[in-house]
Amino acid sequence: MRLLLTLVLMLLPVVSSAQQGKAVMAVHGGAGTITRNSMTPEREKEYRAGLEQALRAGHAILNRGGSSVDAVEAAVRVLEDNPLFNAGKGAVFTHEGRNELDASIMEGKTKMAGAVAALTIVRNPISAARAVMEKSEHVMMAGRGAELFATKMGLEIVDPSYFWTERRWKGLQNQLLEEAKKEKPIGTVGAVAVDRNGNLAAGTSTGGMTNKKYGRIGDAPIIGAGTYAENESCAVSATGHGEFFIRWTVAHDIAALMKYRGLTVQQAGHEVIHKKLKAAGGEGGVIILDAKGNVSMPFNSDGMYRGWIGQDGVPHVSIYKD
Image (cartoon, rainbow, N blue to C red; front, side, top):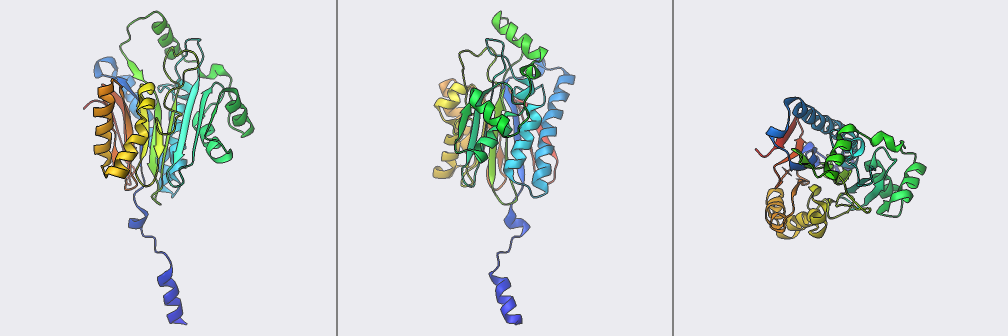
């Protein structure tokens, strides 16, 4: 009997902490002309606190054995609720003076993905994107149809005035008057995470570009451009000039370089962001994470709000080009 029990135990999968891997995540809050000269100490402190809050929210989930998808959604929701960042509450205005929100999410084990575009009444677009991924047969929904779906899924619906902030309204007026602005962020927020089971996930959310026209949609809700995740390579969330990220399928290109050429997260990020994208005239950056917990956050702009957190639970945040 003891021998039989021993044999059974030998056949059972042993999951050690080493085999479980590292629970790590990274976030970004947009890239662009972000310099120390254009930032007050008080505002910089607020940005850093916002990034740290998002990292801690996601890490808390990973630390208790939660999934990477849960962690990504939680981190992005924190950034969506923070008016400093161009997503959710802090979304910029379109040419018509509206807030139109886009988001996407993807998990790396099955490559399931969901995306929403041109939302005007859903408080947290990242949650709407996840609902599309998990509760519909589609990958992307847009406009009124996406809002109706989100309502049926029980997501929090708000009046469009919820997204109005004085800072973003003034930003639109400056654009309309063609006034020079000291700070020109290419605003998007995003998160990537790997959980203890080695599963990757990525999510991205944005209000788009200030003064965008004619139903413009950028790369944030497009799988393979602004968001991508697969366990065999990496998870990517992008921020930048969306048209370039779409045309160069930036997120997927980074994953493909790792998967088929064996590049590291650092090498693949450098190849796409500092070589391919920069040569084409595209500006922005990405956060990249592989299943082993390796992180890279390359950008070719003056700055990018970014940060990562590892097993020890200590957040590391940066803003400028150090």
